[in-house]
Image (cartoon, rainbow, N blue to C red; front, side, top):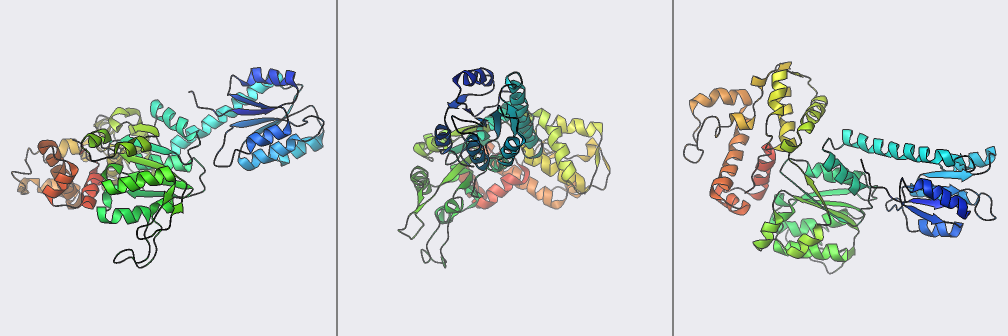
Length: 459
């Protein structure tokens, strides 16, 4: 796997040794060379724990006429979170002890290490890659190599004050990935999330930008807003395509100027934040319809990541299945036919639907779950199995009472809601706004229905 690697900072005052080391290092990562202490310190002055430029520093302990000068570089690198290899011709225990006390990873004899330096670098980068793979095993579970590579390339960059856009079907894990990115960036601020479709248009401006006391009826005290709460951290805007035109204008200005003015106030506040936006909608289509600003679209499309649907990530099904089963307090066993049924299912609701299936199975009074025990939307919904048109015949037939008893009334009602929404969009080619009007439901309820079974409601 080709992991994106930040450069290695090499400090060595002997030009012949520097060239010798360069010939070894260049196969592992780009090199930035400094021959003097002040040069290295100047290069490192542009780094911080949240803004790293180097994956590793290889430091000559004796620079120029000053013995132990390299320790200053080692100490600063340790503060910045940059691992260091120390090179020295000295074998004195005091030098070795000082180097390790200042935070170096390896102390290497510079006259003997040339044949071994490549081995240490390979070992170092292998450990980094192993740590990253461990993150995928525990935090964002996938074996999809293209997706893993795109995420690794992203989190290996400094994403402070950047814009990231995540696309993917409902339930595919966009919010989980946003959390994963934030957690692996060592930001000083918090992860702040906002589902744009669940907030009314009237409240969105205040929720995002904050408001001053007395700005409107009910504003009894100052409110920071999600943007200011995400200062030095990450703001995640899910379903960003639902933002109103007025909020889009203010958001674009906040991104460009890194400044926010609360509702009802003239006071501006400087902010530094990383913006992660996500949606399952086609924003280019909304732009052509005049419902989304093209300049905002280009602004939020900084780093792009697409999460394929679970139907295209077959290798992930059992990984996720085992993960959710391990987290379940009640343990159960899946028969071979049950596993085959899950593997061959299309998973229109993606990871969220799989998680719900496992939760339902854990409620069954069975220790060994067979294929017939698993109720999947595709095979057992009223629309597909019972051949009932919900618009023509919405009344519950007596014959379906066994089905209700099997899955529970709550799950049945969720299923009906999901099917009605899907029917309106697919058969009547309705927009989300029109669907909500036709069914007389709020935006919050629409997105709750969409989340409930992870149904596909695109048009």
